[in-house]
Amino acid sequence: MSVSSGVHAALNPGGVIGNGRYRLLAKSGADARSNAELWRARDGQLNRDVALTVLLGNLADNEAAARARRTVERAMHASSFTHPGVSRVIDVLTPGTGIRPDEGILGIVIAEWTQGTDLMDLIAEGPLPAGAATRLLEPLGAAIEGAHHAGLVLGADHPQRIRVTSDGRLRLAFPGPRPDAIARDDVKGLGAILYLLLTGRWALPGGPQGVPVAPTGPDGSVVAPNALHPYLPHDLSSVAVRSLEDTSVGGIRTSAAILQVLDQIAAEEAQTALIPAVASTRDDDDQVVWTTQRPRQDKQQKKKLWISVGVLALATLTVIVWLSVQIVGFFSDEPSKGGGPTVVINQPGSNGQSAPPPAPAGPVQPAAIGVYDVTNQPDNPNQASRAADNNAGTFWRTDNYFQPFPTLKPGIGLMASFAEPVKLASVTITSPSKGTHVEIRSASALDAPLEETKVIGVADLSDGQTQIQLNEHEPTGHVLIWITQLTSAGGGKNQSEVREVVYTRAQ
Image 1: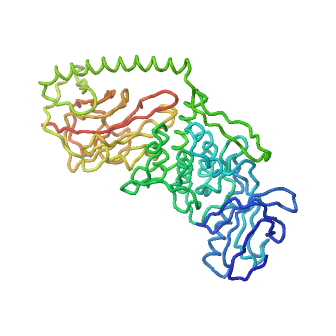
Image 2 (image 1 turned 45 degrees about the horizontal axis):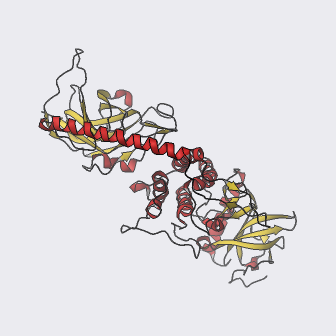
Image 3 (image 1 turned 180 degrees about the horizontal axis):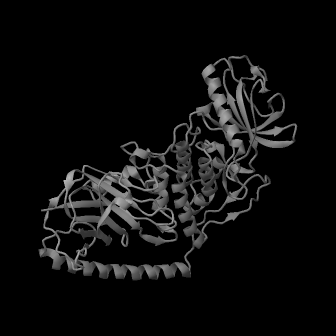
């Protein structure tokens, strides 16, 4: 199998590499970005199957050799990390230490073999339903999250590096991150794999040959999975796309955010048990067959239908009441804007009586608005400006918390900064998150400690507009909307959304 020093090895089934120790059995794929081939091989010394990530190249190419060494080093560092979602690294080889210089191989990462089937074989007959996709992906997502907490990058951003275990889990079967890979690449990889499971299309550069590429819109962004398959849950479709986006425009930063949505969808799907795994009936027991049948019409569905009819009737009655309120309020001084009734909440004065609100002198636009977080883990900070962009069609949204405040943090907020100190009469918040509890606080500085801010108004948001009349206060250059209670949708989902904030100056 010798080759000249300027040509990499031609790997074929039956060939032997690694100083004759590893016999190649079958090629599982190739990662062109790393000039790597992925092989199932037989360890002749220990008499077991292994997964080989073989880095090919010319040893005389110093840059290529350096990149290969970096990949091997990173794989070796990850050998101490154990998780069911990652194949354990057994050994690494480099030229001169297990690899002959004339083999045309710059490095080999040896990992334990993952019984099961290739990910690409799983989707060969079409995309998977949401429940199957989440159940498959959760273990891999948990592995990535654990690795990132340990300061490691796994390189889980290529579909042919992933296999499906016999018990129905996605697993990184061929470790060996690219030399320049960062944690964000793992997050993108997780989103791209979710996209692949839901659509059968790959959404990152450098994918396998023959796999359809994800379609993009006029702005170059990837088309959402539920635009291709409308039956897919919106949250799952959204997280797949946001995982691929740049974090500067609202992209997901961590695998934890993806896991939250996967857990939520998996819990919902578990209640209906739509997608059971079935045993393989093929002679080769190294395969898994999945059934993706849709639910049949049954009594439970009929019950849900009657509930839906009842909800529709109640919604109709609500619309009638809302129209009545709008007619009564037509002649009021404060115009209504938004998707629901405006709720005006008066704050008590210093004498315990309701103080008359200052006469408004009109809206004032903040010079800047950002996320205020005392734990240094702000929620979607790149979306903050959308809360004051005079467009109720855009929004800032908190992360989804499985435990309500103050379990993980005391709260989360939006800090508005003005060009000069202002005295406000009211703050109007447009939001669909009914029940969200907010405090309006004045602050002396952008990064003022929470205990040094002063509460000048409180409210529970309605579904629509909530106008909060403010207590008497000195002019201030910074105003904090501090959220201490999120809207709970049940099932461990605690999340709130702010569509627009209007600050009204006092006379």
